[in-house]
Image (cartoon, rainbow, N blue to C red; front, side, top):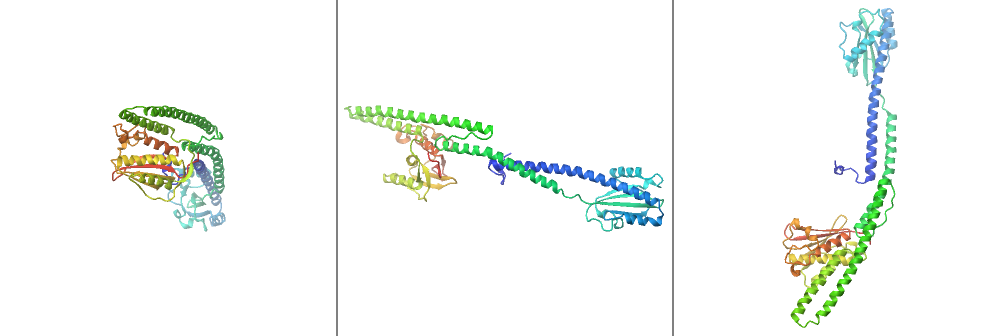
Length: 457
């Protein structure tokens, strides 16, 4: 069951642990209290019934042994707010009784003297409320609430005594409530302590992973907390160290490969100058230019986020300056003004990524409209065109290296297939993302998201 769909369910692990522990202790205390009160109520009811039977038997034995004109003294003396003893005429039949009441009546008969007449009239009734008995049989000033126990015992051939006991409601278990509150507080404090031991190293681990994902270094995570958390932190430290070494080795390798490739290309360019055939020389020179451009783009895409240092810049001004430069050289680019948008980024990489998106929009959609939209945690750079769009099943594939939907392999019409790969690498290197979506009215929209304040590399 997904608990996140509940509106008031906490989102953090620490609060969830405290809430679940407190709820578990509360439920267990309610269950224990219910069971205890149920058992206690049954014991109290049995004790009260035994008390009524014992007193009713004693009163009946006493009244049967004294003159009838003196019996009212006994009933008045023994009556109180919870007891009422009344002489009433002998009923023709015993009162209808349940199985429990019949059991109590048999027990009452065993307690009576054998000389009492008409023992079949002995009855016991358990009444749920005050209204179930006539007022004359109730105590003079009874309790306002409670249950009634009535015993009918014969004292001579024509008279019985009605013994009524008013059992008040059970007192509220204040001690149990106080104990439950104390148990909940103690359990919540203990859960908070454990949550702190677990959550603090997990928070550090999350921050470190976020820093690595945004292209920063690999900070060392303290290996504290429970054993499971310590193992996770240790595994992350090992992984981060290996990733850092791999990336550094890759950057060094790419730098060496780039240098090694540029040297023979430069030598070939110089040697081409000695070819006397102009047509042949121009054709080879174009091939060499294409090779050099392809080499530079491959190196840039492989490096992703290079060695440029992040700086705090105004993203709006950065994109506006790029659009102005493209407009001045005749590119059909429209810029929509936006308020200052402060971000921490590598400016040259962001300009390169936006330029690639704009050039794609111009090449495939005739024109480009650029704007910035605010999002929850950052900004979205939107580049829209008026082209045919891209099928949804192809929108992720075009970010793969050398994938081009234009299949002519002509650089003038299809490019090298590395432009969007480079855009994705730059966006993810800044902790962001890029995606393509078809516009409802036609055309394609490229959305590059950047966090508002990314960690400085």
